[in-house]
Length: 607
Image (cartoon, rainbow, N blue to C red; front, side):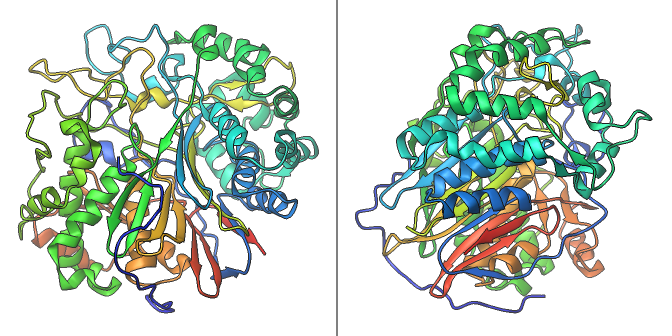
């Protein structure tokens, strides 16, 4: 299980001259804390696993959630595009062939390494200007049931993905913008074969067929999902892509596409949304320095808030570093009851801080004015000392800065979604991008962009990533509550890793999976860089997750003695499918090694 180790990349010291800064169980109610809220899957598991082999490429590679998407990225690289160009083309195809996970109706986070610096691009969705903190409360002031909120216009935030991609391309792209749309337009017009996974998710989804446009497009007349192998064309999306290729994102945010989105949201039956044409026209993506942290002999870079991914991920890994436990030195020890107990307890502590502190930085100040206070070595050492031989029911947030917070912790509620792309080009430039429409098929609202043609794209339900409750029982406000124009907290964790001594790029990785993204990424980092496994071997390792209550172990991947050993240490353990979709690329002396998650339809293409 833990064979095929690769040579260790050894380095010491710090970066010199690198321009980086730290800076499917359904629950009764999203507002109720407790273990049931953590049993949901971002996307339900398929009844099959796609076998993957260790892959190595000499020059460049693209890892994505679907073979057609990865091959589109490879096409762009071979045409002279850079890593960013390839990532954009890959994403446009994903929006077509993997509509349940991402697309024009959603948002994302993108890290781009140009050989000199890492730029963090943020295209997170925003709440409408008319939104209020009570958006997801019923007439009695109680949180709506989660699926009631998901399938509503109120759940739809202003999509940010396209604006982010265009802004990044304007500054750092190489090929013409229109060229990047060609693979997706070709597939949308010629059609693609419905995959086993898409068919399975269509068959099992409880809400999608309630939308007439989606029902007519994704289902047969008898109500059954389109069969595996059915050639699905998307004329509406092809037309939209052609418009945007020629006219840019303005076509999307101010033209007939915008009007189509706004009408669909405000006319959604049940609970219409408040999205306005002005909300769409005024959307702006953000960019800035990546949030980078030292770990072992590496510098690990990720997206700053409103993503919680990098901060929580690096808190977990940083706490583990301070434990100095023999069990963490290799995968066999890590996957022992004691090794897992230490990881789980570190996770509890990190997720307790996440629930209290992290939200949109335009609305919430970092502890002590600096997010890096959550990653100070002295603070992580203090947190590590709190880990005991027996688990506590729930960890409490720490105090990373002298000033005490007035926020209340956010109650547990489900998080979903996403797709991940990793690219390294022949010049050594790289992208790690995670994008999402949140739950599988998002809000289940399919819009045709005003084309009048079959198909189109699905709108997000990202506003359900806000806390449904704006405050606790004592009236203390929750940092991640709904506010006008605010961006909901995310767990997306696109990650680039560098040699801390030379500043050379080492890896690009990330995963879908809701809040479990953080655990899937942590596992893969440990596997590739601490235990020297190939990317595929690291991805294949068993998944686990804890969000500061019950521990989830991937069903069928752990022996009984592990569960019993964890229970003896006070852990409540439940076996569940943990359907990650990890993509990873690792630079080695012999080339680029690639890995794609067999739990979905991931693929690595390159040369």
